[in-house]
Image (cartoon, rainbow, N blue to C red; front, side, top):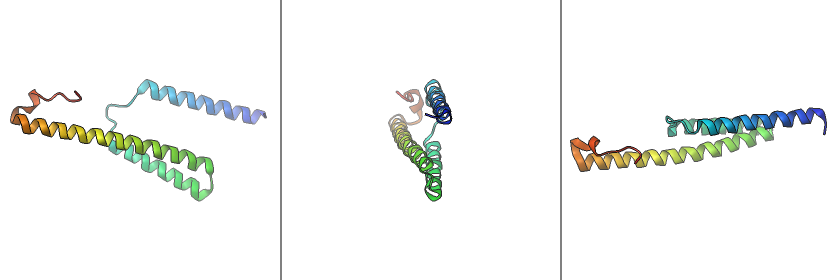
Length: 107
């Protein structure tokens, strides 16, 4: 193994550890809505397209992984938002003007 490759692996490992620790410590932001995940999926698809056009395999692979992960999170948060809207509508219909006294978000 050459020194140049060793430095590259050390840098890649350090970047991975910092990224994962940042994700674990911050968790999912409270304001992460489905539209933000959709934008991230579109950006990942753009990176994938760029990698394919330029013939860069790693770039297209990373872009595809980002696209897949972001799309998964988009569908998950969209489903959660739809369920929350249905739940809120049910409380509004059942309790009328007094629905906020009975509705507990996220419960």
